[in-house]
Each structure stands twice: as structure tokens, then as C-alpha cells.
Image (cartoon, rainbow, N blue to C red; front, side, top):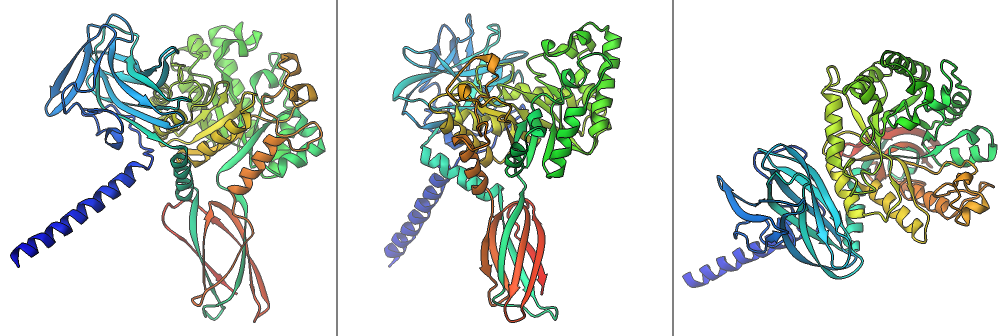
Length: 591
């Protein structure tokens, strides 16, 4: 009997272990959106237990790892933490490496914790591919004395053997690495994760309780629910033709909940000549958008690119430039305060530094403080390109973006300011969806609002496929709050343009939603499809015996019609479904 009991206990224990392993494996197949943007005394554990990386935490010494280039590698230990070190570096890519057999079309997410021996430097992770150029898969600003998380990703279009290595241009510093992870996902798993995220972050359960005026629960009440405005704003840029063509106005207002002007609010548009301001066009555009309840982004107050400032501005003295800049802010922001819900205070402030060079290193931070004072209800944004589009552009990597945000917020009075993250998202290269997601993970760790502000994709045979891939990725990401399509009609969709003309004199749009007769093109049909997919429309149902009707809906504003045949009553109710995570929204209706 005793042996039988022991056997029975063993069976139970084995079942628990197997169940636990299955649950754990299920967790490992789910994407981890987390990212850490602080420099930590000790690195966090490797994501996905390292995925396909051999010896990710160096518990087995240097097993699986070799030197890359002429670096000298070794193992070091601080307290109980082991990590690999590359020293005696003479070339930027002298580091450590590991070989992988990469399967084509899998989406790989990568993470690692890095540190350098002294100072602060950008460290990037690369894949060396036979007979091809190495590709960058992620980068981070690393520091001495603490560990920084590097997160990235990639997808390859063929099966091959690739070699992971690291690069830092400063060869005087030693590179340290710990807790590395490389996790592949199938396209099906990736898409499944998107849908799971949408259910979690874009939807909420509503419970509608219907009562008579006497307080009796009403069974069989017919309910019809329609969303009138989504919380997630999918908008489109526009230009002066918006006020010139009624057919375009109807096409535009029927679809979009947010907008940004191509050029009509920029300084060179409203004050081309010194002290000769003209707001006629933006006034009319704003009037139209307000009339139709379309939220407006203020793009932009300043452009940090020197050539995008007028000659008269560039010829000002330092004192005159400061006075003109402050006057510009007062002029445009006071005029439209209350009409604009987001301002791009600085455009392309990571790539350029015109105002900092002329006015001092705190120029941008000062402008943000003034902007917030002029329009305290609006969110102030930094707007930049290549953070998502081009991993090799080290000027705009996520950690550089975060460093600029911290610089702005460190200015006296800005400590509690919300600074929005504007990502232009002009994709001239094939989009790296894995890298896009990881970059959004890192930027999302700031808890600041993130928008794709000027989204388009270069023309080509896969344009629509890539367009949809990025839209779905952005919409499903928990950190993204809205998208502006850079597809405002402005004669850039002529027959010549649609046939693929690259003649810049024609000012062709990269992607056209409508033709010149305001009939949808394939891209317009795709946008319409997604607008409907991400909306709760014409949902019908009846209250149960407890007078309750439940449904899971997208966040946003709603109209609901209640009809109760026995009493011949029809009641319309408006309500707003906000994001309260897992908490259902209870709505009480009295007929």
C-alpha cells in the first residue's frame, strides 16, 4: 500500500510539472512587449529564457560564444552575475559573436543587456550574412557602471547561417554583454499576438442594465449599438485643396477623425516675408475640420533643419532670432489655442540643431516650456523621421529619442510635462516589422503618447502589402495612440503619378488613396476596410432574464437605441467607452 501511495504521489507531481511546463511554453510563444529604458545595476533575466541563444546568461562559461574580429573575450563575474567582456578592440566591430541557423520569413525579436567600460557610447547589434552586407538589428546608448537593454528584431527572406556580433565606434571602450535573447515567431503567431493585443488594449466589455422606471429588470429589450467616434484616431494629412473642392471635402470628412496640414501651418507658409503674416488658408482649413469634428495636429511650430527656415530668419542676429521665434509661437499658438490638440513644437530635432546652434543647447527645451504655457490643454510633440524606418540611422534610434525627451523634461518647469513622440514613418526601405515592434516597445516604456504622424510607404509592387502590415502593427501596439496617413490629396494623384512617375516637378504623392475624381484607389479601399474592421457597428441584441446585455466593443463614443415592444418605448442613449483595461463598463438605462 505504501508503494502505491508513493507512486500515486509521483504521478500527481509529474502531472503538475507537465502542466506547468505546458503553461510556461504557452507564455514563451506569446510576444513580450516589455522593455526597460533605465540603466540598471544588474541586468534583468533574458526574455523567453534566451530563445534560440546558446548559453544566454553565460552560466556555462563561454560555451556557444566566440570572438569577433581581433577582440579578446573573457568571462567576468560581479557578485553572482556572469557576463562576457570584449577588450583589446582595434576596430568598431571587434566584439563577441554567436552563429545561428535562421529560417526564412520568421519574425525574430532580439534583446540583450550591454555595458561599456567607461563613458557613454552607442552600441549596436548586427547580423553578418554570407555574401551580403551586415544588417543592424538593434542599438542602444550604453553606459559604464550599469546595464542598458538593447531591443530589436529582423526577418530574413531565405534560410541561412548568420553571425551575431556587436559594434561600437569607440574602440577604446570594452564591451560587456549579458542575458541575450533571440526568439523567432511565425507569421501566424505574430498575427495572433496582434489580435490578442487589440482585444486587450482597444476593446472593453460593456454591460447594459435595462430597467423600467419602477426599477424592474426588463427582459427582451432590443438594443442596437453604433460607434460614432473611435478613441483611436486614424487620420490623414491634407492641404489647401481641402477648401477648394467640395467633392474632396465630402470624401475626407466621411472617413477621418484627425488631420495634419502638409505645409499650411509651417512658419515659411504663414510668414514667408518678415512681419507679413497670412493665415487665410489655415484659418479656412481649421474652420472646415472643426465643423466636422476632426481633431487637428499643429504641424509644425519650428523646423530644426536649417534650409527649412526662411532667408530672413537665417539672417537675423541671435537676439533678433530669439525675439522672432517667441513672436512666431505667440502668433500661431494664440491664434489656434483650443483648436489644436497636438503641437509639433520641434520638427526633426534629432537630426538637426539649427535653433540650438544659434540660441544655445536649451533652445528646444525652452520652446517647449513656452508652448505649454501658451496652450496648456494641448500635448506638445517632438516629430522625427527614421526611428522606425531605418535602423541604421543612429541619429534617431529609440534610445536617442528618449535621451532628447529627457533633455527637454530636465529644463526647469518641464519636469512633469507630457512630451508626445511623433514618428514620421516615411518608409523608403522594406519595413522591418520586428524592428518596428521592438522600437515601439522601447518608446512605449516612456509612458508618453506615441503617434505615427506622416505615414506612407514608397511605391512598388508590394506597397499595399507593406502599408497594411505597418498599419496593423501600429494599431495593435499597446503604446500607439493614433496614426496620420501622409496621403492628403493635392493633385499628386494624376494619371502620370499613378503610372509611377518619379518626376519631382509633378509633386506626386508616394501613396494615393483617391484619384483626381475622388474615387477610391486600392489604398483607399484598404483604409476603408481597416476603418470598418476597427469599429463597432450595427450590433444588435436583447437583454436577458436579468435585464442585462453584454458585448465587447472598441473604445469610443456610442449611440444605442433601446426598444421594448410591450411598452412601445424607444430610447436613444449616448455613452463613452474608455480604456479601463479589464474592468467592464456598467451602463444603466431606464425605459
